[in-house]
Length: 160
Image 1 (cartoon, one colour):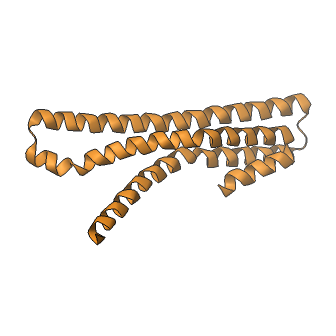
Image 2: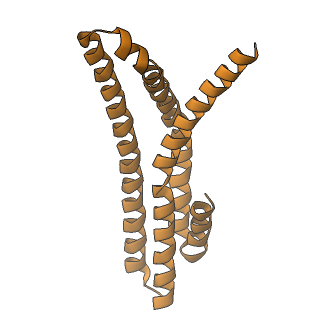
Image 3: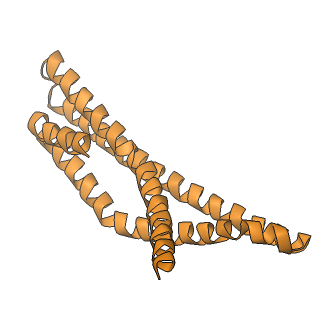
């Protein structure tokens, strides 16, 4: 997070309008994050509920029920993977817009010095690479959150 905000701040200093666009990108993603996380929580809850029943299903269920069980697990994993891919698509699209805008702005308004262009490109890449980690971090956090809730529930049941 420090890299994302630091790079955005440096973009504001080096190329104001590119920095403004990076802040807009961050705001849009911040607005979309709660919905993205909620969907992930639902998917991971359903997946982990199924995975917890694996042993009982293998012991007691017949072949048709096992096929149905593992078919649902496969569909949930595909939905989770598709959602993560959509996150990467959104980040890639936003970065293409930011890079395109910045390069067009530099071309139309003069490049400045080579050092300025190099610094600007470095901070653009830092912003892009840091933001590129976010979809996977959200997925990991969402899954760990569900697992932590399950552990808390189990420890409360054991205490009672």
